[in-house]
Each structure stands twice: as structure tokens, then as C-alpha cells.
Length: 303
Image (cartoon, rainbow, N blue to C red; front, side):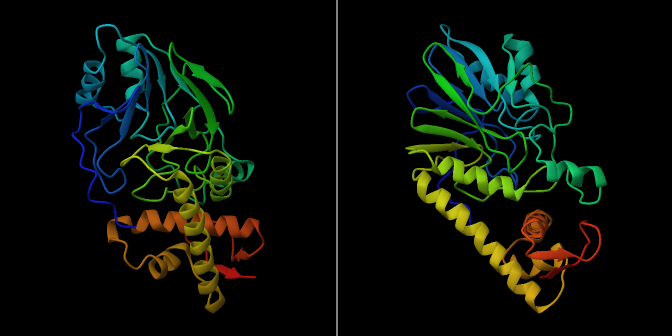
């Protein structure tokens, strides 16, 4: 999917999106982060900071500069433990005395299947993970985080990574890296789990959302349409994989090269990880089989 050209925000500058919601884009643009990580400030008096972002002194100062004379940062919420979302939490907590809140550390929320895969050490993964992250307070699915004029509901949405959460406030949702408008999410086993990802999409479909505020890129103005697209996109990828495996056994990388024909070489590695996630999911569905132990270099066959 080609990123839209109309999202060109000022970085390290607070922009009001609606009453009680401001966004500061971190100065960490890349092929995987688009213009940079979106840090959100929620509230008008007690402020929640959602996803402080990478460990960057300029971004830290931008967050602190956005706090008005009658405001105070009371909560620091991390949606998941990737290096572009969580590392600045500790420095921000030190500057504000606010607790760091998250679902857990880097391995929290992993499915049993991914735990077993991680124990083998054969499928790689671990890219971009903040292994040092430890929250002060742990939240679970269905919990509420409360400020003076806001209440955020925690929705556990594993898939991109096991500890991923979205945060609902009335009819809006901060979807972090689960739902974005400019690209689909990376799912890289054993940190990511495609089975979980699809179930999390279905979970979000149960709500009538007005708008999504993602971890990268601009707001998603039609959440239902975007969720439908994400689910269909994954199902189409699955069909393409199965069709190619009807012809001959193949590895994840071989399949990625055949399917992601318009993907720049720099992103082929991420595409391969997504295909591997599909293959592992298809093994669990008894649709394909691995010719040997599951690994990045294993050939797969259609059953």
C-alpha cells in the first residue's frame, strides 16, 4: 500500500486533534515508522501520555513543553514494547513522577504457540523489541485508566506483539500499531502472532467507532472500512501463499519475493516475516506443513 502524501505534520510540536486530544510526532521517520511515532496527550488537566516514543531528548522536551501551567502529566501509557514506542517512558516518568502503565514486559501476552516457538530459537524475531521495559503498573483487558476528565478502556489486542493494547475513549480509539491508515502491521513471530492479530481485528469490529488515532500516520476516519480492509488484506495474502504452494514447496522468503513484487528491497525482510507469520498460522490450521522444524529457512508444502 502506498502511503498517503497528505500527512506531513510538524514534528516535536503539539497539534490539537479534538478537545482533549493532542498529538506530537517524534523525530524518528523511517520506512517502518512513516513520519515518526505519534505520541498522544489526552485530557485537559490531568494528562495521559500515550506512547512516549523513542529515547530522544528533543522529543522528551517537546512533551514537557506541551504541558500547560494548570496541567500535569499523571499517567504514562505504553501500548506495546517496540523501540519506537516505549523507551522514553522511563525518562518521562523521572521528569514527571507519573507511573508507567502497560500490559507487561516484552514477552507478556504471548500465545502458548509463540512461547513454544520462542523456546526453540529457530524462527528468529526479536527485531525492534524494548527488552529492558518494565512498567510500574500492569493493566489487563477491560481495565479502565481514569483521569479528571477522561477514562480510557484497555483493549488487549495481541498480534503485532503479544503485549499490544488499544485504548478506547467513548467512540474514539488509540489503535497504536494494530490499525494504521498508511500501512498494515508487521507480524513477526514469535513476538507477533497472526492468529491473535485476526482475532484482535474481530474484537475491534464489535464496537461502533467514530475515529482511530494510530501509532503512525494520520487519523483513520472510517474505522469499520479500515478493519474490513485489514482482514481482507490478510485473507488475500493467505490465498496467494496457498496458491503458490500448490505449485511447489517454498520458503517464506521465496514466497515473499513472489507476492510482494512492488516492495522495495529494504522492506523485503519485513515482508518475509509477515509471510512466515501466515505460514505458521496455516500450519496451525493444518493447511500447510513444514518440511522440517519451523525456521526462517524451512520449506513449506500445501496439504
